[in-house]
Length: 241
Image (cartoon, rainbow, N blue to C red; front, side, top):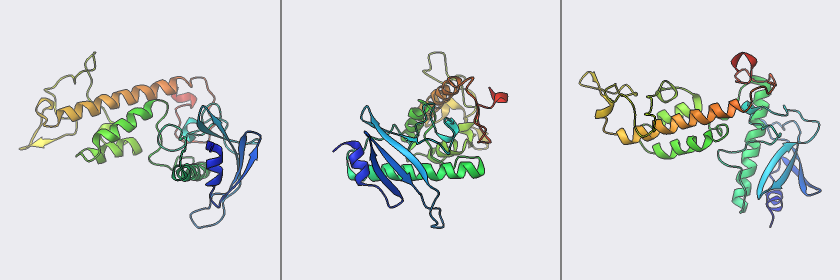
């Protein structure tokens, strides 16, 4: 069964699906939290290189491109928190519809409040690879919540000024400086070189440097691209680039 057939067979009640050439044409009305039916959004789903790509049909309701709203330069959507899903089972197809429903609800929120509403969104470009690596690295550790706070809300020490790396990126510089978490023992700061979790902290900080590097690279690739003006926080605004 093709990806499109699998997705079409798993359509939720809020989506009407029709075949349109080699694609799917979707009329989506994602319910509001109150249960009230949502406004219609018309979408087109195509299968390219064994992955599903979703765009708005013309005329669009949303910007043709807005990285802050997770709409790519070619008009396709960033769904979920990883690479574009290629559902192979009914449960994966159902998850794809959940992601699409969340995406549509987030666009509705963005139109009203000029902000993105999905906390654990996929980071831009290849930054998402390091986002996922940081989550996996720190799962179940003492810094798991601190990493989540940084990745989802941009707060905490991980989102602040983190220690620099050596030129070969194989260790932290200045190991005699205090722990970046602000750890204290007997009323005195713990030095980086005495941290019992130094290996974990190094790998975390190394991944965060890479994530920031990829995020900057992503926005650099959009220099000169016009801002749609629909989001309050967007690096595409001329005053920030």
